[in-house]
Length: 549
Image 1: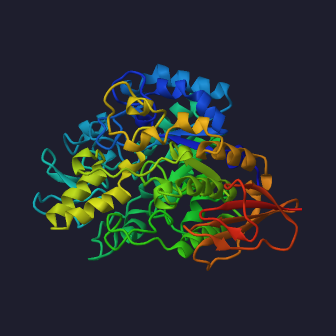
Image 2 (image 1 turned 120 degrees about the horizontal axis):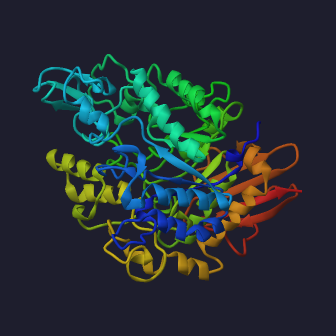
Image 3 (image 1 turned 180 degrees about the vertical axis):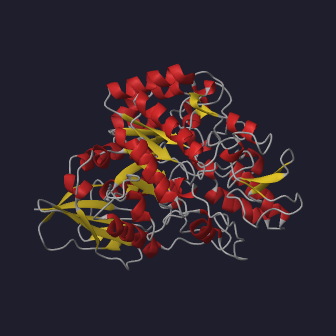
């Protein structure tokens, strides 16, 4: 397998508005990131990925961009961004920017022009259909509830928006649109940006017949078979690679809603020259019920393990995997996949060990390294996220049990991951001297960076150890993978090996001890999340990494 810097690195994802506020306006900013570079560097990460910081009306927290070349003044503007990039590079840390080009903001100049008339030069930058204000072109539903079509009175037609009404989808069929996007990519890469995370990139090619989705089709299937993996998506990505990406030594990771094992390998095939990695969501939609994320079902652990094995096998020969358990769009990983109560510390460490011992590039989301947890507000008024609030309104309108729905919000809202970073015990967790844009989690006095720094057995110190351990073991990066107990309902036990080394990794994903004997072969314990591991028995949420002598 070809070696690359981005395969050997570890990514730390920053949600800038929730990371560190230095101005007192309640919003995190780029100076806040610069001020915390010692901390970021101390983790041992080699790349940071910044969620969008461009000019935006913030209908969807920056994923609605109104100027692709301007860093929003609320984050510090372009000059501060240049300072951040230089400061990162001085420390040997690379910067991945978010590229959001399935849609723009409706306040972008292109759309402001496009909506004026059908013969405006920008009209064909977007997707228009239909001519009856009473009858949308089809029954498609937005990711954020409601129709994907919005009527534009000036041209007497609808425009398409797979997300909010303020996020009109760009028309990639138009070569001028594609060239505009490639020029934007070139602008940032020429500046020295080291990579791009491409938002919902699997959705850029549309099925132009726009036929209705079958009645009752689960939304996960609609994503996969109707919205994603359109007929020209691979052509577009290959063209972007040829025209601009191939000129730079950068990393590309595509967010792939609807990308499955059948399509996934094509996106990241080294031979096809499209992207380096994708974020698939098979393991992150695992607890979605028939009505989607706010209809949660119990997590199937055997299926969870199978997903990692299937994707590893699919990409083993020609491609590369992204290893992640959460991000700004999902619940906190210790609340979702661990135990955020009595075993919060052990289970958060287990998840760190899992991330650092699978084949692929690991991604850590800010706050997970100190074991931040889901938030459970008592009222929907305390939630900011447009997806959560729209889902709430839709549930109210359909007569759902709203007490039960609030519990689903506690479990699944994107705001779980967006509460401000918990730095210390001072007011607002040291995030801001002003009123934070979103409430700080009430547990910040016990869960914060300062407390973790002072505790040699903290989750934070374990993350540092695991990151250093992974970076020192090429076998854990490139080696083969095999699940040794695929049907076990509580143990995740796997081998990682190459011609030089072999590791055996075991995780107890349960709240009770399990009898387990290591194989008689000469395996030596290298690292684990319990100080005094018992012979013949795994403690609750225990992880161990053994090396074969």
